[in-house]
Image (tube, rainbow, N blue to C red; front, side, top):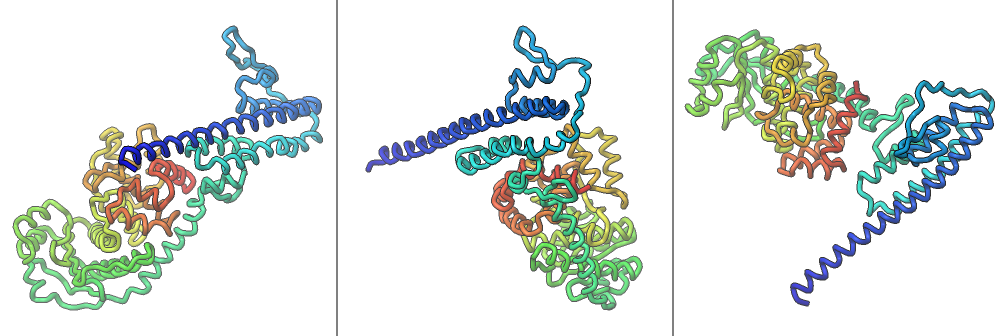
Length: 479
């Protein structure tokens, strides 16, 4: 068979499949229309029965339901007191008194009669969705499910298909139900990590460490980290414990087995001028590296296991060192770097907060949506220890001008704005709390170079737009 013949055959198969899908879609719509006709007929009978029993409010509710499926149903419009103009447009009556139900005994029968009227439609649509699953677009399936929920809000098949669970008399995302327990588990992991952390040993700075210039006190060391500080001795001890526990928390929280550099060493500089001494005397730094580090408040020294944080308060130094250390672990375990801004910042901030209670280390671009004064006020609030970042994120993400996750996931750390940072943070919270089993694989794929859109679809079974909507809804349920 020649090449042109093969191409023609392939094209015919594609066209045939498309035609088949269109036929299946048309078959679904025809069968659904028949089911709607049957539903409307049964609802008409219910409305008539309500009228005979003087259950007028129930009858009005039934008429409204009919109009959701047959917008031009004349009987329902007339029953609701609507009038039709010369152009054929129905209008609601003004100042119409609300109807009432008078036969209380009959009213008790309404739920059962309504269920009998709507259940055949729901069951038929479920069967049609199963039968034509391959031919229907996701949007059409969701619309059909919406019709079922309109009639039967507690329909278990639709709720399950949408990843929902019933909690305290309301339907919420399964992730919402999972997250409540998971948050407790994460706190237990942090507690256990600190309990397993050995008490740091004390040792004098080595000759090479003294040659760096700053006046370090005794070093605090554990089997995985050595910390030297120019402030109080307790600062080095606290940092050594937090960094040791951080590795434990990271690995247990993300089902990983990452480790720091074999010679992981942290310098915490409390006094002015010490930064310049360290930059000038560290043997691994050349002029290019010094120029890169000089404007920063902290950084790793390339080619070594050394990290330095200078200036600010003790809490800022501890926070910054913890963030950098977690960054090392994310790169080691999953290949996540500052190029993956949403993951690097979002997970880093969330896990630092869980580990030591602060979120002080982040640098973002000005907001693209807020006025400069409002953006500055938001940033100031985010630095306060008592600020609820979940509430702040909800306020930003429910607004008219809000970031889209599809854009946020394409940015590096240096390109994130204030609202991007919040979206990254709550996305990490959603994944760590609500999707803990899938999160490590999602991070692994993103770190390996898979586009976020593809990684989300492969691992979470939804596209990024759906994840965007799900995170926003989760936020409202989590608060």
